[in-house]
Length: 280
Image (cartoon, rainbow, N blue to C red; front, side, top):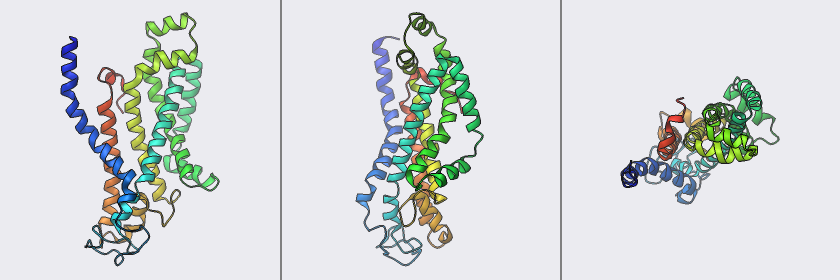
């Protein structure tokens, strides 16, 4: 394909990519800026408990009469920040371990065996073990638990994608030429795994959203009266028939956030590398 034809193909793909990325950008921006947009204080009753939507509370009231919309706008920031941090940490750690394991087979076998053992731990049990044993618990403990639970799966994916790259002629030539390990990892292998790593980031963000939300629902992360989407679902489940928005709105926000970010990561993945991305 000529350079001009390639440029036209990329230009024609830009609108579709933008449409897939835009929802994620808007949702993340809304979650981050939400506390400044909230019409009421998150701890101030503005209506009767489980009040229906009205002029003072567009989405009605929660179990204490607090504005559901205000708590919805405020409750997404910590979830987004925590999930992004978990996804970045898991992707970086898995990329390094997977690439090193591809170049050093002995290290790779050890990493894979450890990952196999850690994958046997159920996610909910792992969250409880880490958060309840962590001094003070809280958001940092949830992030640590999510990273520990996410790395084993991510390492196996990266190792599978890195193995064919490590067996190529240019990597073998670099090894024969005496290049250091970190040069092989950073200059020869990881640049050829951009599509895999971007897709992995999207998957790990989705997993992190659900793990962090699960911790909030189990009340081992944020504690009442904090505004948190998962905490809102737990607190208001008893009154779902009186004011469904108190449960439906945060549930929909969690699902849309995870879906939109995953679609955005897939849309941004380089076209030339998508065949290397394993199907989960």
